[in-house]
Length: 229
Image 1: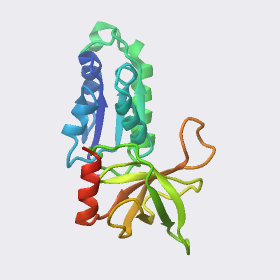
Image 2 (image 1 turned 135 degrees about the horizontal axis):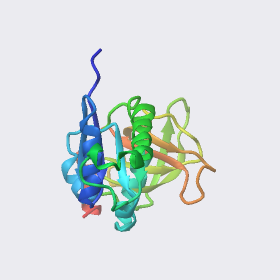
Image 3 (image 1 turned 30 degrees about the vertical axis):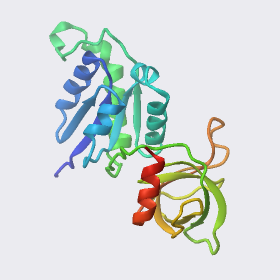
């Protein structure tokens, strides 16, 4: 049986953490671990690549800028993510003869469960790297299966997509149509649902849906580019 290629990204600024997980995953067939010291490195290095999951070092995450934290939070709605602690006692290489391997069985089991239960069943996806900004555009949105659009607002937007506020839970990969009335070109934009956050699921943020644009007009692209500078 051919095992499909599994690509996982690790975000950690600590070399010994990166070395520990690289050694673990190098022993797995058709598994690639790519390490990034921070979100900026991830954005630069992830282009044209597709991932089945991410591993995030919590202390690197805590020390990141708020915009980077928001970026990871958005990824958490699309990808399976394993959050790990920053344990400086982890050696840089696996060496069972040193006698520490049994003490790391818990980390190894957690990683194995993460890969088998979450990453293996995940359809690999690309990571958007475009600038995203909080802008409350007025919009008319129509979800798949609805006869009429409804009025709402964007919570944030980039040239690749946006988050719209809505209490209705949506299915990933469903089509959606939106008209952003605050743009000079009000042509309806076709998109696809990438993730959905239903009302009542989290008191820390608004409910709604993350939308990827299928295509923008030249005027819409130019208007968003000017706003995102």
